[in-house]
Length: 234
Ligand code: GLN
Image 1 (tube, helix red, strand yellow):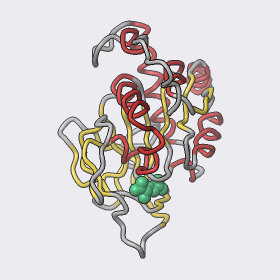
Image 2 (cartoon, helix red, strand yellow; image 1 turned 135 degrees about the vertical axis):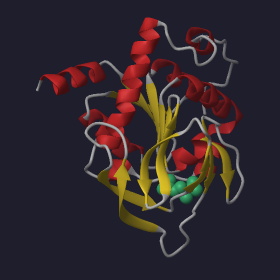
Image 3 (cartoon, helix red, strand yellow; image 1 turned 90 degrees about the vertical axis):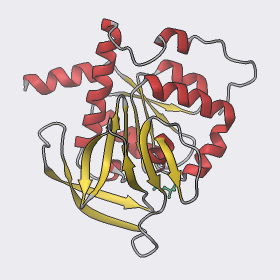
C-alpha cells in the first residue's frame, strides 16, 4: 500500500538510539528495526549527537541514574529537551519532572509526578488491557499492556497529552518531543505505541529540516557545545 511504503521509506532514514546501559534494550531494538528504523545501541554520551531520537528502556531507574553519572545525566537532559525521546517504565521515570517512592531526580522532559513501584507486591507484574487514544488507526482501541514493577503517573501538567489509559490511570503520555509509557510495549506484538513514537521522530526531523522547531536553543549550538576532556563515558 502506498501509505505504508511511504511511511517505511521515511523511517528508514531515521537513526534511533536505544540507551543500552542496562535493562531490556534489545526488545526495543528489534521492534524499531521491524518498523524500518536504523537502530544504534547508545553506550556513550557522544553517540547522542548522532541520532534522531532515543528510547530509554525499562530497568531500574536508580541504577540508570548511577550509571549515567553527573555528566551523562546533564548530556541526556539537554538531549531530551531537543530530540524525540521515548521512555518505558524506568525510562518513563527518568523523563518525569517529579519522582516519588523514593524521591529521585528526573530529566524534567514531561511535567508529571510519577510513583515508582506503585502497584504493590501482589501486582508486581501483570498483563492488562487498556485503551490507546491516539496514533495510527488506534483511537480508543484496546491495547495489551505488560506491567513489570510499574510506576503510576499521579499528576500531569496542562501541556501533557494522554496517549493511552488503563482504567482511570494515564499510562502513555507525551509532551513536546518526549513520550513516556509506564508499561512495556516492546513486550507485546502490537506495534502501535512504537509507531506513534516513530511518527513523532519523523515529524521532528521534518521540522528540523524546515527549520521550524523553536523549542529551545538552536540544535547545532547545543550539540556542538565543546565537551570536557575525559568525559566520553556515561
Ligand atoms: N521498578 C523500576 C523502577 O522503579 C521500573 C521497572 C521497569 O522498568 N520494569 O525504576
